[in-house]
Length: 174
Image (cartoon, rainbow, N blue to C red; front, side, top):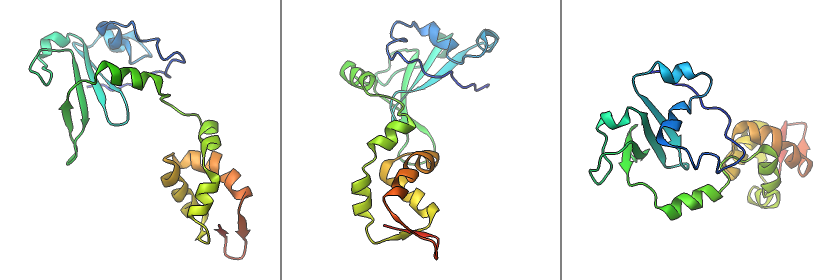
């Protein structure tokens, strides 16, 4: 099995709406050699943070995969299991759910995360507490559900402007 990353997502969210099942075999970008040498191709796509679609675009009909209703398919819907490290097969989303997911922005940029951050609410939630820089970053990540890198580079600099810095103890006081 060879795993390969996909290219950057297209700016137009509807750019793949007309794709056929075979078009997804080229999802691995980089080289057609990755697609053409393989006997079969599977593509795992994130639908949302909890739901994934496993597409079987090249020779997928021969795989004998079945959906939750027992029908043969080249597209399986999966989610992370509640217990253990495994996948669970689930029903495909409805057309309404698919349309709702298409309308949501998938990836937020660092500037948009920083501008959407509720600085006032965060400061109120941690009022009177003392943090080291690392503790503050951890708290931001939990509050905003963002990466450590985004917290350090985009949110923390602005947050520092709104707080006092205790140089003696190298802690931030909110």
